[in-house]
Length: 78
Length: 358
Image 1 (cartoon, rainbow over the protein chains, first blue to last red):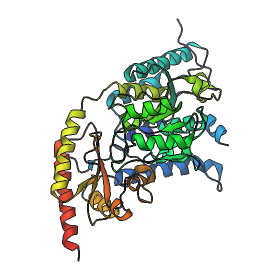
Image 2: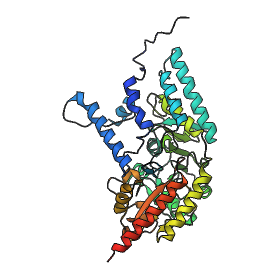
Image 3: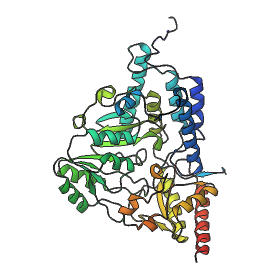
Image 4: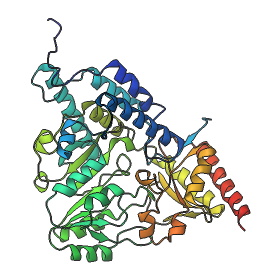
């Protein structure tokens, strides 16, 4: 049996190694709730805001970027 | 001994190793569970297997709708459950309060933060026919456990539906026998961004179309759901130890001149609120943080501004007193030594502040 060839990237794509690596600390030592008032919480909040800047960068200045659970949720909000 | 001691497990708690492995394994085999090919079908099978595990572990006989978390489940039930007026208890989490909106009928509590047969009767009368009643299982600030049997009977007798926010009790206490139960995985060692809405009878919830049999559109988060099931499977065997730790801490705080909020009410042993007379919560949080302890005040989601807690206000605390209360919460990893050190720090901070009073 030949190895399967996946040609359904429109439906979904494999998790990129860079993404997995970026998530790792959050699953281990950096687990704070971004709304908590203590240091671990403040670090988590900073990480969220840094991610927000990085995701928004390609879209140029102006406007706001809100994180959702996916495209369908965002469509329903708007 | 670690440098910092984390006692804010009610805000969130570390991801369990079994959950992390389930997540990574699901990512390795990831495909869209709605895809028609073999990879998609395998993902679908894994999703349904995780769903069945969650149903089995919670003993839930109705529908298990997978969501992005408790807040989403609460908003969905409040917006789409059948029924006319919404009734919201005075001690609900901000997420429930917001979803209930300005038109919600308030349901009062006693000094321990418990709804009573009298306050239930008054609210249900005001709400009229077919109400949707939101009363939590466990309070996220005080740990107080509501009289679940009383609530179920009263709501049923009124021909209403009961929405129970079980976010703090899930993975620790039996799941309430309500019409809607919501929770988030990250409160019991699962990943953030996933939760469930348990629905007794889907006919009581208006569908939206899309996935989850038309009740929750959006590609299903298989890795998250797998992590949630794995974390839930770990069980609540550690609660006995938590109860001992909490009893010790309650006694230490009282011995040092503090007040245990809702001391004699039924409380989940993993959460406690303590008042330090004369010392603002803001100041306590700064001092505890500097001393290496992560604790909280109000509730995490509203702590940006540390406004006085509506929960404590509803229990009869004056604003100044409510402003002296912090929350401590335990997790699986909480050790005896951590509690002893926190108790010492609490007494020190209280004593120093007392020394500085005019």
